[in-house]
Amino acid sequence: MPSIKAFAPLRYNPSEIPDLGAVIAPPYDVISDDRRRQLLERDPHNIIRLILPEGTDDARYAGAAALLDEWQRSGVLVRESGESLYLYTQAFDHPVTGERITRHGFLARVRLSPFSDGEILPHERTLSGPKADRLKLMQATNANLEPIFGVYRDPSNVSARRLEELTQQPPLIDATDADGVQHRVWRVTGADAEAFAQDLRSSTIFIVDGHHRYETALNYRGQSNGADRPVDSIMMFLAPMGDPGLVILPTHRVVHSLASFDFDALLERLGEHFTITDVTSDDAGLAMLDEHRSTPSYLLVAGPRMAVVSLKPGTEPSSIVDASLPESVQELDVTILHEHILEHILGISKEAQASQTNLRYVKSAEDAFAEARRPDVQLVALMNATRLEQVERVAQSGHVMPQKSTYFYPKLASGLLINPLWE
Image 1 (cartoon, rainbow, N blue to C red):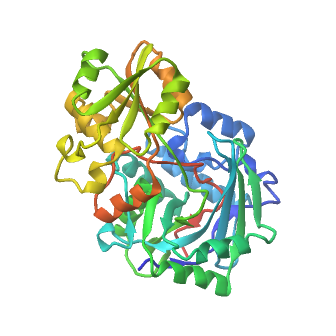
Image 2 (cartoon, rainbow, N blue to C red):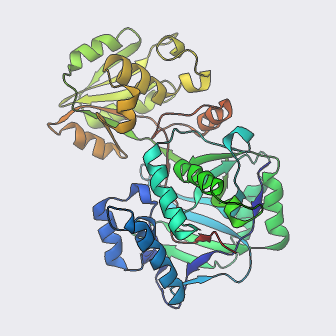
Image 3 (cartoon, one colour):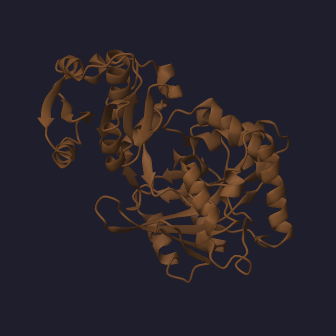
């Protein structure tokens, strides 16, 4: 059963940093060079200097460690005097509907557990490069700088109701970032903290973001000795699965640099297993794609041409993807796209997909259409979002989805709390 603990984090000192919104940032892996520059222009103490230190060689990790020490000595960062859990909410506008939504959860130290134990389960494939990078940073700083995002079952909505009740009090932290997302944090101690620990003892934690960082923490622990120390736990944000703030958006695929590509030939091959409907505008294509969200479907765009392709009724996914995969994995839009369309038809191997030799990813439909108009792009595949119940089924199967299968919006903020891995 998952075990959670209260902890005494580092946080920005409000006496030194009056505008916390200027020093928090999205996770390191979604920060472009331009975004990094913008964050530092807002405040030179932005957390980006720790989570994405400047430089191209290993000296940048030592630089991050030195900066972390300096900020503690100068009072920019202070450590909480006692151990607590921390409720955390994010209020945001849905990027498609515009609806104002609040995500509820809490931050805690969670005991590390290998996936084989079944207490904490992944749903996405990881790559070796990011794990090596994060391990060097964790070894240099001896700190868990960013939370991992997990969800857990709350069938009676007990956790959800408790979260709602506890967030009626004035928060410890209240900050709005550059994207307009409001981040609020409360301390929780005593019986309330123990109640959340009890909720988790009958559940499983499903990682929804931060797979590389979780596996990095396992590797970090493997290089340390001793039991029941901070190194045996990692900071995680945990949200009940019924929370309305668990918004999943799609990630679209951009295909480029193939030796040859013929859109008509692709559609002809797809015609055996997919219904194909030509569309004449971006909006019409998106509307039709949404109508087919319960069936594996894609809006394919090649220059000025576009078509919605949808798996024909009666077509078994096992007939076009690896039949040895669990059914929960076979039926995913991303599995069929990556195995059947990208690999079998277009010839982009799994290795080329992993290294992004012929593939890149964009988050918004607007960016996807812009990519499709670029002369070096051969095909863009717009997708519907993966559903939360699919994430759970895949994780329970013991298998994982292709990378970039889910995009939980918004990302958690880095810089609200830092989990030091020392007593």
